[in-house]
Image (cartoon, helix red, strand yellow):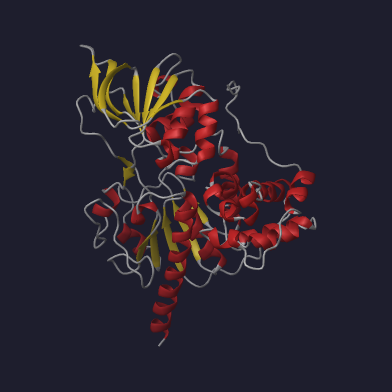
Length: 442
């Protein structure tokens, strides 16, 4: 089992020599499948070519033409299903380590302070961005590059959303998130922390303050639950709430008992995505005995294979084709055991099992909070609470000048897919503001 006495980052970066050696393996394909497989069409062969020559300043400049968050994408993107999965060398089981190279270039740039962005004058219009997760940061960075004055309104003390509070430190150090946020600030983006739009400021207030357009990128903050016996027990915890509380404890902003998982606890995580894996690996680090219960097979699990393998190496157990049926508690409301139903992989027979348990962590998805939508006159949402947007201008809601993107409008997705959508919305916002400015000038 992996040594888990430390909580810092698990995967080590390349050295300079290792990075250049890895880059030199790139075949520089004329029709680069790696670039086509990247959701934001990162120009991978171009910056790898610069890295081969040792031109790291040029490499990061090329990367930042497409991505405002390269240190983050290099760590948490699903490379094995995207760029690396499409690499022609992958057919021989030896794909270029694109993610690790991107991380190296971005980290080297930050440590050596190589880049000097040409910041345009921000005279093209004013945009308010609500939320500073992957979509909000992407919209803000792209619009700032286009010459717009951008201000971010973030309800929490720190920026980053799921990057800051939902992805564990061992996968994504918080100093890396803070560094990328600082880069966006250095581009001229203003950030208002602990400023909640919906309960404090309203959409109308922002328009009254002179903003030409507003972007809603608040992500998903309402946990999905299971309608089962004992499902509302205090010992049934939402995965992102657990991960957030743990991060706040690490920063001295929450008590240890708020984490709700302790050494020796028997913990069952429900779900098969990367969030379930993150929750399980974090619980193991807290000294718990952990199993993941997933309703389908290992091959159908949406989590990355690499994340699954690391979880196994750290002692996380897995039960496939298993559903949680009930949670049982004693007279004091303390969890005692859970009832599960498992299907035999060989003959399909169903059987019920009672498993001793102290905690259940739900990682079965989430949906948007409806507070902001309710407080935003004219912004419509569907039955699931997701904000309805249109194709032209891309990302505009039912209210003129109000745009939305990322998970709050497009269902739960990966970081880079939220970024891809946000980049399209940024173009839609630019077209919209240019159009209204043109009409006003006539």
